[in-house]
Structure formats: structure tokens, C-alpha cells
Length: 247
Length: 319
Ligand SMILES: Nc1ncnc2c1ncn2[C@@H]1O[C@H](COP(=O)(O)OP(=O)(O)OP(=O)(O)O)[C@@H](O)[C@H]1O
Ligand SMILES: [Mg+2]
Image 1 (tube, rainbow over the protein chains, first blue to last red):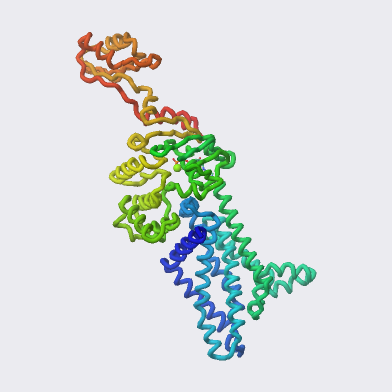
Image 2: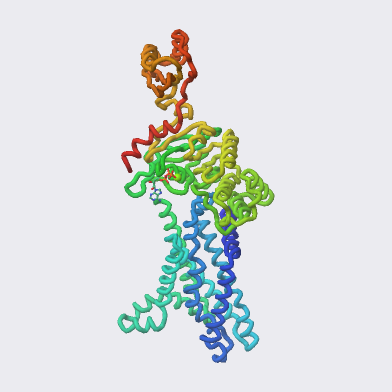
């Protein structure tokens, strides 16, 4: 119970931090503009002539590639730059609680950004008869995807007090996680390697595991993939923070 | 309340803290002195559980900081060096957050914040964002944060750094007042501060404790402590020197000034002979010789002289 109230206090502070600066609002606007642009222009939403959000969700791995690290890069680097990490970790709070609290706050913020795309869902319902179950699983997958990127960014931001570096490293890791299962890349890879190797590499990709959600298929293995990616990255964040303190 | 034993911290090959032991009881105010880079902050960071020691044990209120960090941390209020604070929060929001992490809720939390704001004179910046505060106010906000839960153990790294003289005075009084009910450790580079508020002083140099005692005990270590200082008119310095050297309780003498018939001279006590009163002997001698005494007093010894005498040799040798 105590652990939970500590986490809650940290979540509240972090979220408050987002909304006292104009950056949060700028981010939300950029996010909505970009989703709109990708969905309706690049994704040719109307030309498809089908009542689904495929053109909306397809772009999320690429959209999040920059937007999620932008949200998460300050998570720990700012704390280290300001020295407030010394304050936070000498409070009666465990490293684990601090870590989860900060992560949850940013995740909630991203979920809020995603929730604000509801007009897109309303539009398809107005225009046709989409399968709302599929739309729902698409949103679930998208939230998990954002969480995975965010956990990775949390890890890179613990590595350095420089936000720019933490951003770049996070983008690179996330890019790798996309490309490992991105069709043009897997196609290229299959020319050199056996199908088993290609599948193995693709198993590490967010693309492979996000795909099912877009089709309305909730596979336990996909959920386990995202959950363990987040768990691993957050665990590593904890290890990095501990090792910094040990000097 | 605080027991530290054989504390060692190595950063790579470098020993920042080298086998430090001390204890602080409730009602004590312990001052940490030492040159830059001596290891004061590093020691405090280990006591508060921010960094783990390379070896040694730390107990706060009976709880091992390494094995049971949470109960130990609950007892501690900590002001880190440079008083960090969340730049984007208001003073009110920041203190409120600190109170919440300290387990204070509802009315208790509000009154804790009110009390801290009052104690640290933050009323007129209460709703200002920390980023825009002046250095002194930022420091006071950090101080308020450390006091928010009225902790039994208070650890402050340079609490008066950046404060104006009035605020320095207020903070010293505050520390002194709280000192009777808490165990307090603070570091400083201001020696008068130590004399004003500490019941005990530890001087750290290059990771080791080089002196540990009350401010008076430390002052007694100054070379001129207990010396008789006198100003005499109309007697030649040589005659004074000779007469003073004849006193059994005096070790040697030193002429400090000799012009226009006025001589200032110091007689050092013979420290091998305990319990003798040099000043009384000098006064008797002066009366006997009918010297025209302008001034006669016992010198106290100054903390800055002791500090220099203890820590300077190392600084000169270089790091
Ligand atoms: N994280 C670290 N990594 C490497 N060395 C460190 C680290 N922190 C401190 N040191 C070194 O340990 C030594 C002690 O530093 P510390 O900050 O404890 O000194 P201090 O007594 O507080 O000095 P000051 O009066 O300047 O505040 C210094 O030589 C410092 O360079
Ligand atoms: Mg220091």
C-alpha cells in the first residue's frame, strides 16, 4: 500500500511537470497533426474505401520512433542534471518505485495523446461499419508499443545526463526493433540467411508483434513480448541507476 | 542516533573517504569541516543512503542504512549540496510533493508545508517556480524540504551556502534550536558557524578524520592558545623577554611589536606543566616589576588557525 502511494505521488508530480510547460501541449498538437497526416494522406484512408483503421495504426511504429523518445528522454537525465535524483532516492522510496512511477506517468501521457485521436475512430464509424473490436485491439497494441519504446527511452535516459544523447540512442534502438521485422529488410535478409534465422531475428521486432493487434488478433505471445521488453528495459534502468550511485 | 564505523568509499583507485568512524547522539550538533574535496559530501551521501559505501557500516536510529534503508531514510531529513529542486515546480508544489513522499496526508501535509514555509521564510515566494528563484531562496526551499517531516536526524550539506548574513544568522539559530531535540550533522566552510552552533566538530582531510572534539577543545590545539599577551609601555623588549622567561609556567616568549616605547609580547604556556596559571604569574611579575601594563589577557586560540595548522601541510604537498 505504501509502495503504491509512493508511486502515485511520483506519477502525479511527473504528470504535473508535463502540463506546467507548454511543451506538453506542443507535443499533443504535433502528435495529432502527424497521425492525421499519416492516416489520411500517406495512408490513403479514403482511397482504400474500407471501414477500418489500418491506415491509422500501420504508421504508429514509425510515428512513435521519434515522438516517444522525445517524451521520455528527460525521464532520468533531467533528474541527474538537476541533482534531484539525490533528493528522490534519499526519500523513503525504493529505486523500483521511483522507476515505475516515472515510467507510468510518461506512459499515461502517451496514452492520453493516443486517446485524443478518438475523432478518427468516430469518423470511420460515421462513414461505414467498421469492426470496433479490431479498432480496440489496435489501440491496445499501440499503447503496448508506446510502452515498449518508452521503457527503452527510460533506459537510455538513465545512461546520460545529456537529453540529446539519450534521445538519439533510444531512436537507434527502437529503429533496430522496427527494422528487424520490417518487410523490405527481412526480404533482403532472406537472400543471405535461412528462413529460420530470418524468423528468429524478426521475433525480436515490434513489427512482428504489433501486426496481430492491427488485425484484431490478441495473441498471448505478443503481449508477453511487449511486457517482457518493458520489464527488461526497466530492470536495466534500475541497474544503471544503481551503478551510477555506486560510482 | 547515527553510528558510522570504518566507512570507506573508493572512486576507482581514489579513496574519497578513508576509514571514517563517528557517532552522533540526540541533542548533538556535529559540524563537518575540511578543505574542498576532503570527503564531507561523500560521507553524507553514504549516511543518507544515496551512495553505497565500499566498506563499513552505517546505522541511523538503530537501522542499518544498507540492509533496511527505508526505516532509516524515514528518520532522516537531508539537504544535499547545492540544494537541488525540481525546476518546473512551485515552492508550494515541491514541498507538498516532499511531504507526500514522507507519508503525510491531508491536513497533516498542509500544516507541514505551512510550518516549513514559515521556518524558512518562504512566504513571499510560495507560489513561484523554483527555476526562477534566487540562489538563496532556492537554498531555503531545499532546507524547508529537509525539515518537512520534522525528522529526528538532520543532515545538511552546507546549509548556509548562498544565504545573506541575516538569513545565515536565522538558519544558525534554527539549527541551534532544533539541536536540542535532534541529531544534526552539517558541513560548512564558515568557521564562526561551527563555534556558534556545534556541540562537536570533526575535521576531515583527504578522506580521514584529523580532529574530533568540542570547538573549545579544538581551539586549545592552536599554538597560541592559553598564551599570555601583554602590552607594556616604557620597558625595553629585551628586559621583558628576560623577566618573562624566568617564570616557571612560561615556555618561551615572542615579541610581536616593539616601537616608540610600546612593546607587545606573548608568553607561551609550558604545556608540560598542567594546572599552572600563566596569566596569574605574569600579573604578579608585572606588579612586582612595576611595569606600566596597558593590556594583559589570555589568548584563546582561533579555529581558523587550528584548521590551517591541521590541513595545510597536505594541501601544500598537493593532491
Ligand atoms: N561520483 C564521483 N566519482 C569520482 N570521484 C568522486 C565522485 N564524487 C566525489 N568524488 C571525489 O571524492 C572526493 C571527495 O569529494 P566530496 O564531494 O566528498 O568533497 P567535499 O569535502 O564535499 O568538498 P567540498 O568542500 O568542495 O564540497 C573528491 O576528490 C571528489 O573529486
Ligand atoms: Mg561538498
